[in-house]
Amino acid sequence: MTTTTLPRGAAAHAGTAAEDAAYARVTWRLLPLLFLCYVAAYLDRVNVGFAKLQMLNDLKFSESIYGLGAGIFFIGYFIFEVPSNLMLHRFGARKWIARIMISWGVISGCMMFVQTPTSFYILRFFLGVAEAGFFPGIILYLTYWYPAARRAKVTSLFMTGIPMAGVIGGPLSGWILTAFDGAQGMAGWKWLFLLEAIPSVLLGVVVLVALKDKIADAGWLSADEKKMLQSNIDADGAHIEDHSASGAFRNPKVWVLSAAYFGFIMGLYGVGFWLPSLVKASGVANTTTIGFLVAIPYAAAVGCMIWTSRHSDRTGERRWHIAIPAIAGAVGLVASTLVPQTPLWAIVTLTIATMGILTGLAQFWCLPPAFLGGAAAAAGIALINSVGNLAGFVSPFIVGWIKDVTGSTNNGLFVIAASLIVGGAIVLSMSKRVVNR
Picture (cartoon, rainbow, N blue to C red):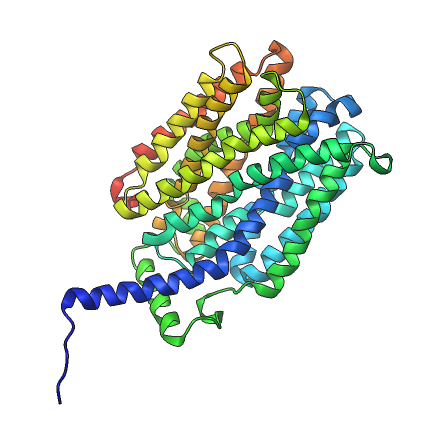
């Protein structure tokens, strides 16, 4: 009887090929649905930036009222973020993510009934309560399936939901504002909130039916594939510093990352809530045209995020893959203020800013799971996200207040740019040994 022994390298390659095939199956099963959920989530969160183009005039709101209402979402988000993520860790992603999506879809649709600043503030606050736990819950959920070495790519693929919400939502929102304005006696901004809430509710039902909580539940994986993927997750866990929820709160690196993330979120929502207004200020009046132009920076960001994530996973380097894009985002924001405004200059500079901000954010989420696991990951990821997202309150309010006082958004953009640079510097100050995995 003759036995054939594969060369050592060939055996390793076969193992890698089997893993790649299994992870490809996982990605195709999970990512399209999670991606669509994030598109819907981000669209419902920031479509108020498009509604603003009509809403402020109809309701006689000032820029400061808009900025406070846009930002108060994050107060509710902050208060309920950590408890929500711990509930997801305890009860499973399928039920909890479905609950989040259905409740936020209903509340987002109710934004059509806003009449006063008070009703605006209340609904935005409860929208934040409803959505609390969604994003950090997904980041935590991905750690149940993917080891650290594969996490940058899959996190970036998920987070391309942000720019794709801009690519899809920009033209869609601009079209709804124009085409539905006056239909059935309702303003276009009311139709915007109503129509864009429907996908969230429907996707919540799909999540309840289709999502699997963990590797062991995946009937579309073989027993060998389940064992292989779970062993990779278990091996990852051997390097984790903290596993308890209380450990996350005591870990100084969690608070350092919270500060860095605060700076990055200043940039994200500076762009997210004000991009349509910045394009309009450059000389574009038609809301449909604004919608298509806003899609350009987000479309460019998709390619940048995917390329950077692949390079980050290939090299194992994380810090510079976060800091350089953040600095580029700051440069883009500052550059957008430096010459007389034209639509071309606004789109070019804001595209650079959007690419940098979103790419840095996507890479950032490789850092917390590098030293947190179990309940500590649930608490720590939620804590970082909730503290950082307080910038979602600060950023639009500062820009709105500065515009009311000075008549220009420029100084507000300078504050946001400085925050991005500080965030990048904080990440670079962390030890390579801790974060480069």
